[in-house]
Amino acid sequence: MNDSYFRLDGQEIPPAADNSYSKVRLGGCGRTVLVHVASGIGNIVLATPLLLTLYANDYIVDLLVDGDYPETAELFDGWNILRAVYSGRTRQHTTGNYDIIIAAIPPFYWRGYASRYDRVTNCIQRPPDALFYRNEQAYYLEFARALGICMETAPPCYRLPAERFFCADPDTRTVVLAPGCKTGEMSAKRWPHFVELANRFEHVAVVGTPDDLRFWGGSSMSFSGHCRMLAGQLTLRETAAVLAGASVVVANDSGLGHLAAALGAATIMLFGPTPDETLGPFPPNVTVLRSGFSCEPCWFTPRRFGACRRTVECLTALTVDSVVAAIIVQLKREQASAKANAFATKEREKLGRAG
Image (cartoon, rainbow, N blue to C red; front, side, top):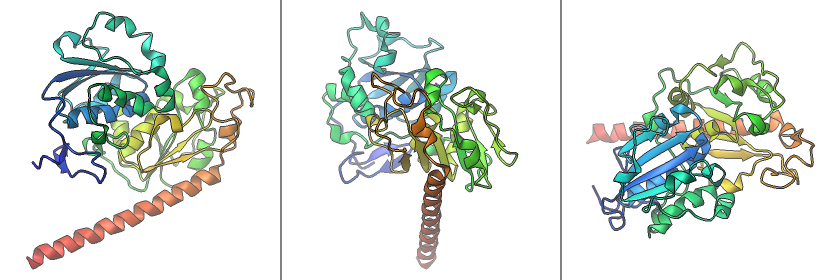
């Protein structure tokens, strides 16, 4: 393999113009590192630039996943940049066998984990909490910077290899809707118009958990019969396969939304009370939509929901028409890309026959 190339999932990826994926052989020198991530799917997915950067710098990386959902660790099984993946629920790991420990855990979850690391001497110091609330991906990458790693080797945004998630029943015409997110106050992030949106398209699938089919107020969503109701029917890994094979995914600021984005699916993410800029850069396949009210985002302010008195008007005002328009743009891009790929394939076949 060319040493300037970055190997990912068995493929040699040439360095980008800014060297964002260049393979260097100076930092890790085969040292072992355990990266501990938690807790939401979105938080864990946003930590993937750290994993990629450690791998690109010759660290041997094991991943410990303490996810809100027991299956979260399975999203990383078989990824060749990781030597091993452990679920925090199984306790099949130890922190004593590593050169370096990185507790890449969001500040608002840290209280539940801090005592584990009180006497761990090889744990990298955590970055200032304030960085997390400015740029979550940069927060995780700060652990790599603390190891002396050049940030030119860091990928530009979060990602997961879609090739590892095979959909047995792919339908590239399908618009996949992920109408949920976490429960409790987090459910205020749920856009209230998914049912109406589903009625605008012929091929629709709905994914998530059974609870995801509830509005912020607690009432149930009722989708029409033409929708493939996959919510509660699939494992998380199977859901990832559906997302990866979708024509377009529409989601809230949620774990499934960020998972779809990381897998390279054309993804439209709907934001209201929560900020999008503080997450760091999105993959190029993501379109962010929000109403743009002066009071949003309010999530990390002292007056959360203060302007709307908990009616979350910023999401209610985000129209179905605006989301449909964004979907159509994405579908046209998908069609243009498919035509270009088909043309390129034919040209290669012609060259092969001529040779």
